Every structure is written in structure tokens, then in C-alpha cells.
Image (tube, rainbow over all chains, first blue to last red; front, top):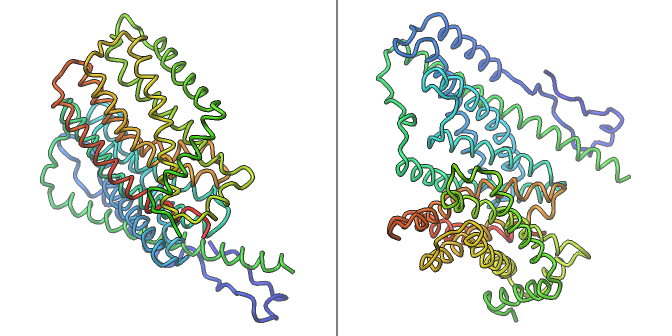
Amino acid sequence: MSSISVADPARDQTGTRPTIEERPLFGWLFAIAVACMVAAYVRAVAFTPIEALQGAAQKIYYVHVPAALSAYLSLGIVALMSIVYLWLHDERADRLAESAGEVGLVFLTVVLTTGPLWGKPIWGTWWTWDARLTLTLFLWFLTAGYLVLRGAVEDPAMRARYSAVLGILAALLIPFIHLSVYLFNTLHPKPILLKPDKPSMPSEMLITFFSFFVACTILCIALISARYRYGVERDGLRALESDGGDR
Amino acid sequence: MRPPVLTAAWLVARKDLKIEFRTRTAFLAVLVFAILGVAIFYFAWDSTAVAAIDLAPGVLWVIFTFSGLLSLQRSFGAEQSERALDGLLLSPIDREAIFLGKALANLVFVAGIQLVTIPAVALLYNLPLGRTIVILLAIALLAAVGLVAVGTLFSAMAANTRLAELLLPMLSLPFFVPVVYGAAQATSTLLAGRPTIEAWPFLKLLIAFDLVFLFACTLAFPFTLEE
């Protein structure tokens, strides 16, 4: 996909207008991510042995866990960039937080859809209020709320401050939600919640897992950087528009 | 000269409470909403299958959450008309004091609702309160501090957005989870006649939440205002 062209020859002649470098949104990193993903899928489907107890359903693991790790990576970036923004008031930190928030929501959605698909055949239920499941669900709510908040504030500086405040408070909230669910489960044990310990994996499966992990992480970074570039161009376009509107 | 933060906070709280006392509409409306909610909930369960005493803690805390949201909405929504907030910002007081004052007024409001709703639930659901009412009121107060700290901050933020009424619950409810959970579990432990010590882990959760978020929200509040 190529970028939106905002260069207007008539305007460029004045020389003082902010010009935007034209670069494709999805660069070489995205291409590498897609290639790795395809390779990892082929390996998982065709060249990885089927797990003895869980059968083919266990293969969801290869998508589920790397997606969760990428989601945590993205949300970690949101929290970190929120602090950086309130400290330095740098709009790049805000844009990076915005990009990571959107990508994080995508990966959380992948985790929350693959989870029940795996849970139904193995645990016998689509959903249980287990600590990690509940925490992931609330991370999804918080991230969705974060993006809705961003969409609801017009002024860019105010939007950046509000979302940074929410990003930091959400990071503070996570230990509390975790603690709540932990107390909940220890006081009311339900056998169905007990997830069997992860068996030590044979090397073929481990390699498949790591190839998915690498592919997923590259994809996550590629999506965030593509979304970041989109943010740069969108803000540049808005600056040009408001510049033109003033005259 | 700027007055000390707590004095200034008290002035802001007194202003809000005075407005509320003179109009009285919001308090009565939220109170009726809370009791109405309690009554409606009774019909959502089969009272022959589930004992009212098992139902009550959940009902109580769901109602407090939503009536709390209704009252928090008002807190900064009221300052929007005729840009009253600008006047508040121009006054020579710290911004932290504005937050603490607003939060204090909201706390009085929410605690007032709880003070009427808890006996109403006890009456309607036939709860054997007895001596536990003192601890129950303490739990309610601890929970109210947490709800109000987070809710006041989000009320300030939501009032400036396009989706104010929708955004406040959407932002606040995930933050209310530990509060509602801790308070409801502590309440049901007490109502079941178990020793108070068993409710202690939940009370610790509430106290930790109150301390962390009261501190964090007070520090964060100045960032939500125009610079």
C-alpha cells in the first residue's frame, strides 16, 4: 500500500510549507513479518508433530501465546510512552503510544478469540474466570476505552495528556485486578480452573513455537511502525489543511 | 497568598455541597434510583431458589457502582455550564486542591447515598445486620474513597469529550473491579456470620487501592486541565 499523496505542487513553490516524505506505510519489515508468519504456519501445520493428549487443538498454542506476548509488548510501550509524554511533552511519544495501543488491541483480540477455541476442546468450556483470562479480558476493555477516549477528544494536546493519564493509571490498575482474581480463585477453588502444568516440550514443538514468537514480534513491530507512519502523515495533512484554512 | 491545600480543598468541597444542598435534586434522584434498583433486582432472581442474604452483597455493590457513576457525572458536568470551571481555575488555589475538594464533595454525596441504601437493603432483603452494620459502613466508606478518587478524575476528563455520558462508565468500570470485588466479598463474609478476620484480605485490597489511586489521581489531575 502506498502512502496518501499530500504533496501539492502549487503549495510546494512557497517553500515554507511542511512537506511530507512519501514512503510506503508497510515497508520491508512488514514483508519480512509476513514471510516469517507464512513459514511458521507451514511449519506448524505440516512439520510439527501432533500433541499426544490434546491432538490438533494444541497447535492453537503456537498462535495464542506469541500473540499474548506481542500484546503485552504493545501495552508495555503504551504505558512507557504515556510516562515519557507527561514528562517530555513530545508528540512522538503520544503517537507511538497511540500506534501501540491499536496494535495491542488487535493482538489482545487474537488472544481472546484463540483462547476459547482452544479452551472448549481441552478444558471443556469456552471461558472460565481464571486469573489470566480475566486479566486479558480487562486489558482488552482498558485498551478499548483508551482508544475510544482518544477518538472523543478534539484537541491534540489535550488528547495526548488525557490518554497518557489513562495509560499510566491502567498500568497501576493491573496488579489490583490480578490480585482480585487471585484472591477470588484461592478462596473459591474450582477444579476446572486448574490449568495443567505445561509439559516440557519436545524440540520440534519448541522450534515451531519460537518461529511463531519471532514472526509475531516482527509483525507487531512492523504494524506499530506502519501505524506510526500513518500517524505522522495524518498529522502532517492536518497541519497542511489548517495552514491552508487560515488564509 | 495561596491557602494551604487542605483548606482550599475544603472550600471547593463546601461550594459543591452548598450547591447540592440548595438544589437537592441530584441527591434525591440518585437516592430514588438506588432504592429502585434494589427493588428491581429482587425480581430478577427466583427468591425461592436463591436466599436474599446471598444476593444482597452483589446487589448492594452493583447499585453503588451505578449510582456512584450517576453522581460523579454531575461533578464536572456542572462546571461546564457558563464555563464555571474557568472561574475555579482562576482562583488562587492549587489544582490538587480542586481535585481533593471535588473528590471530598463526591465522597459526601456517595456516602450519603450508602447511608440510606444499606438500611434500605437490610429492610427489603431481611438481612440480620445487628452489630455488623458498623463494619459494613466502614467497608462502604473505604470502597467509596476508591470509587470517588478514580471517578472524580475521569469525570473531569469525560466532561471535556464528545462522549461524556458514555465515556465515564467506560473508563471507570474496569477501575471499579477491585473495589466492587473487595467490598462485595467482605460484605458477604460478614453477612454469612463469619469472623471479621476472614474479611481482612479484602479490606487490605480496598485500603491499598484507596491509597494508590488517591495519590496517583491527585498527581494526575493537573494534567487533565488546560495548561
